[in-house]
Image (cartoon, rainbow, N blue to C red; front, side, top):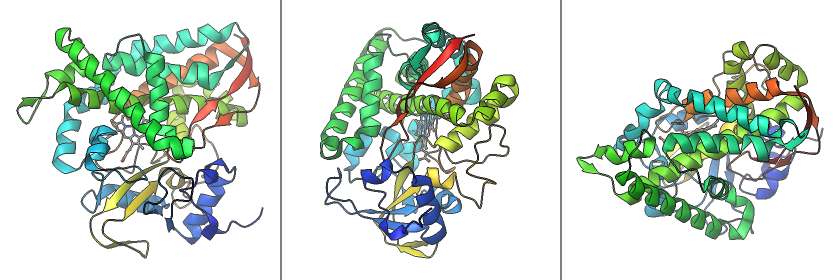
Length: 409
Ligand code: HEM
């Protein structure tokens, strides 16, 4: 294989994300230039804005994530520039710091705890079984589009208390909101309009929920006071927007990629199929490590500092690449082996352990293993029926299509 010239790598360029050797490129960065500068190229949505530092080693990602005073989220967590208002309207408390972040996260923290999410067990099992049953007799399907993506949409919407209608539209909007950077110059407009529609829809549901509260997350948000006051309908709408965008696309990505992994590593599929009870927990964590559904989060340095010998100036963007940390050879034995029994597995797929660590990890841990178990129970002789289609986003490791053939068990 040709040696990769680390100076030629530009993580801001969508073209980079079409490369098939991108994990090798990250390995080269980790080895030779663990903290590297990237400018926005012509044609990228952020052209003309100042670029960012990319942090690629496991320990450095943890350092950045853990120091929320030196590396803040409030100036946005995306690659491009945003005003404080825009950042909150497109990410809510994900893009806040310290007290404000803590107070808002606390409103829903208990509901997302391991105990809190167990109430979704039956629903997750039910949706997994019925979605697989709906394709089973056809002998083929697009596993990413028809199975993996709709599954968490149903679970998350039930959990939040979103009505049954419009769920497909909600999913489309979350894909544009998170992976809209693939649209190049059109991205800023498309992404902003997806967030506006999500916020408006959330605001509308908030109004209905005030009249008819239920046993769901949005009703909880409506009934909780923050700093002694009830949240406005718009603020409840922002909660909705953050939770649907964070909860649908990510888990759908794990589902779609799980099939891609199983076809690439059939012996691992067999291990999982033989004993789902024993393997689903380590198997799920390995899927998240391997896939890294969210590729990065950005912070902004508040003071001049140094990471791995590289000077970072106050005000500069620092981007943590979770996919790279998750293949860091100093942390994982055989990082390029997909091993559903890997244990321990301290991956950073849910974040680097700081205050913004994924709120929904326990919901994802609960729901996704049901989808894998039902797939392996109801479908046999699974084989590819075409090439998978990846989404060349810089933010999410999406899978648009995963055609398969199978026989019904
Ligand atoms: C396998 C699926 C998932 C993955 C890989 C994932 C990944 C992530 C990552 C990397 C972060 C940023 C962490 C940081 O900045 O330190 C995050 C934050 C977040 N995630 Fe997830 N996520 C998943 C599923 C979910 C689900 C199902 C929900 C809820 C329905 C959810 C809700 C959130 C929220 C609300 C935040 C922001 C937390 C904060 O700012 O305090 N996630 N997630």
